[in-house]
Length: 69
Image: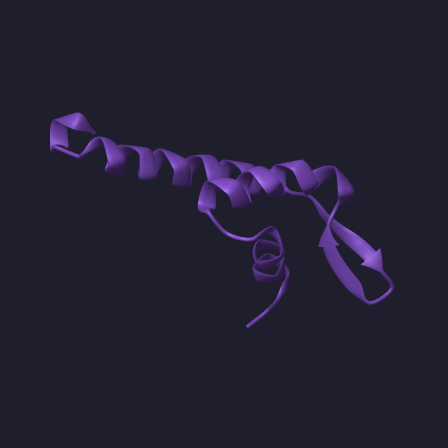
């Protein structure tokens, strides 16, 4: 990335995005009640890491991943 003259901040932003995407790929979903689907309890730490890297609230991230628009 230095060869195409990305700044250190731009490189870090790109790497953060890749890290977040990889973490989100590890999230498992399942039924949390008869009428709702959501991330499994085992995926909470993974979601926390992704939300932290993306700089978003955990509840907002979960809602955006489970709500159809």
